[in-house]
Amino acid sequence: MELQIVSSTEIPLGSPLPWPLYDGEGRLLLDAGFVVECESQRDILLGHGVYRNAAQAAMGSAAIPDAGDGNEDGPGAAFERMGLQMGTPVQLTDGQSRYFGRLIGYIRDKSLLVSTPIVNGVPLLLKAGEQFTLRAFTGKNAYAFDSAVMRTQSFPVHYLHMSLPLDVREAPLRRSVRAPVKLLAALLPTGDGRSWPAQVMDIATSGAMLASPYPLDDAAGGLKLNLPIRLEGTDFNLKLPVVVRNRHPKDQHAYRYGVEFQQLSTSDRLVLQNLVYQTLCAQRAYGAFATG
Image 1: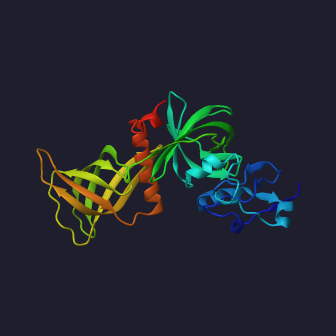
Image 2: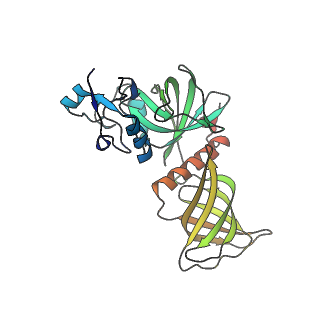
Image 3: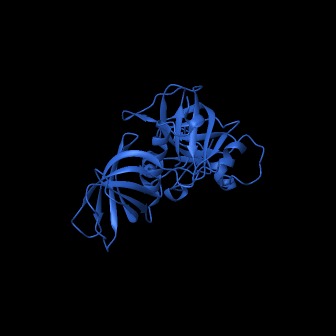
């Protein structure tokens, strides 16, 4: 195989690779369909030198087909009908333990690419053939399906090739799924040095219910919810713009406020989605979908 070096402009960010990438010795680094998510990942690749098949370059780059382009009864049809987006949190369970990763790619009719779960700061050691039930949800439905590890990869990130589902189990979700939590947070008026301590009682990607021992003033400049959380061994300090939509009189302990999130960034929305999903799975809120 004749190799041709790949430049930074040929590696798209946030989109499936249209062809495999190799090192200078012709060893496979990334399969076609892998999604390079950020500049740092691309820089790691370029720092080692990456190549593609020169014959493919001569023929031009055929893009990975969209999910809706025919092939309705192909091996990937059941997966494609779910409409999951890249970055969607995915739970893997083997009947005893639960782990969390993300959907990072899809090779048409071949495999799913899922980030390797991190346990205690270390990628989980998995072998080809291990069986899991995968669970994910969109804004409307929860999904569960069986899949097996086909292959593990460790460069440039740890990820798994997993078999395509033959059958997908589906259940509808409420319009805005809320997960019961108890998280310490603070409300900060925009441009003001004050802050009000609060506890997040439940949370969704659209808003949250807060409890605070203090009455909130009407902040003309708006409010931000400062919410530190830990997910998959990583610390996040979210600063989410919010609007107070309803207020409840003080009970024996606290006032309660329903807040709506405003203009969330894509990264903040994914973190919230992951938080909601992990909480619901841990509390078996999906019934049959969360068993095992």
